[in-house]
Image (cartoon, rainbow, N blue to C red; front, side, top):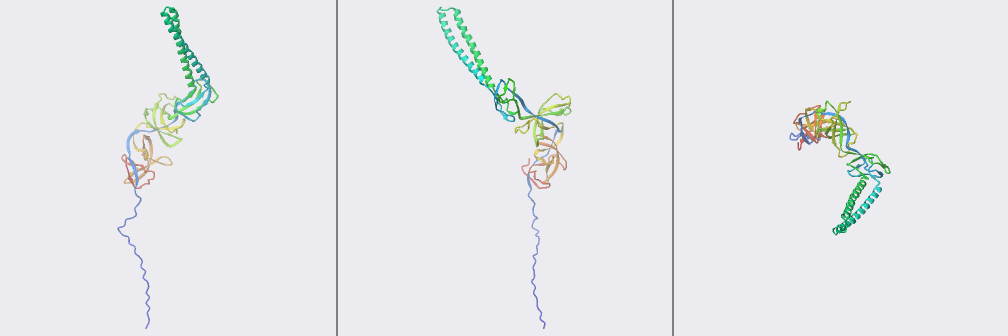
Length: 360
């Protein structure tokens, strides 16, 4: 009888994975929190950018009021001084001796006046008793009056010498920086000789030649934007403070003065400036300055919120108007009422989900 061997093979069980319909797909990153502000359309001037040069608000060649030899030079070129601070001190010994002489002379006159008054009082008593004549009494009274006039002259001389002594210290008429030194220790100065050139740069004036065709669009008090080639990436606020009514015959341009606050002293005299005037009125789209995302190669971009996502596109800046820029989209669309990101726009990516926080 044949023997059959039954071979039992192990049954391998393979797990079957089934996707449950109740599980959700992996979620993306949460929306980026941003602060937005609306785009506005207003009538503004057509910007006009012209080149100018900076000047100090005040600049003066400070001179000596007295003659004398320089004993000390307290302020050096480039240093800042405050109003009333000593710049130069002249030798005072000769005037001090004159003052001592004048004071001694007045003390002598004071003593003579006291004696003359006593003599005149005795003379009045003697005259009342008929011991002296009226002419003798009048002579003593006249002497007192003469001595009083001498006393006044001596007092005036003392005040004059003291004033000259105070002028031996040449002081700063205003706060500023020393631009030039015109003397040195040991030098003899005559009255009126310049000591230093002092300039006040806390506010600078940008003198800009404006063509006569464009002058009508500029008026006193206009706010302007000022940029300096030496200070890239920053715009300074300025104000038109003078329009000089005299044209340059060669260029037919009128000097316009723009005042720019300079509390940190970063703007120096003689810097090249580019002044943007608002010009003639026109309609423009205005965005807050914080909404502009500067680009390395120049220009900028704007991030607009549409359907909860960031739409980023380049814009051209047409001018600055206070805290806002007038812009024109180079791509995409921008309309009044659109909301642009003013906080959190530096790291946004096109199409990224955003959540508006504290919208303005």
